Length: 263
Image (tube, rainbow, N blue to C red):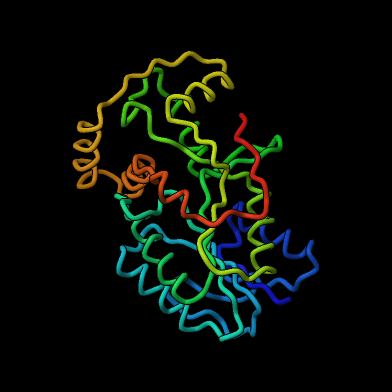
């Protein structure tokens, strides 16, 4: 099987590539600095691939440009090429961040095309190596400040995906070629207050928190939308926007068990 991987320099991308090779498949690394040159917004290289595992994303693209980039990629796929897209629990019908809205548009396009979408939570590692991405950002903030404001009274939920399990699931998706939107995270949620407590215990530090009411949280985020760094603000909006339980229940179940998050 010939499998192309976009976004292959990220931690999840590197894990997916390792699993593609370990499964005995032919790997094609696709990206701006990879063996097959490509950037988001362009059609994929004509490589006669059996499957493309699409991990690339650009937070700098607005919703319309991201939609156009996804459409361009879909048009370039051959009839025999199955597309797998990695999305997020930040992507859903009521998402308030640019990231969440863009990913949600892309999910619908990919599903209509007959591809598969896998929704991950915050990605963590079960080994001794440090965690990255949004989880590392949260960890850094918790360790930096002795007093922490928690939006939505600290009750908004986080879901987690262990990185190696996620990579195995994506490669398994390339083998199965089942279309639809799949859960790619452990369904056991941890709310913001519980996550702060776990990080504090790991760091052997004591943190004080104060809970921001829902209405005030919404007001602060709307003000933040028009000031400061768009990347940071969009990350805050992603964290504050929680996928509903009804949408989680609509997701197709994976064939792999996802470990619970442990610090």
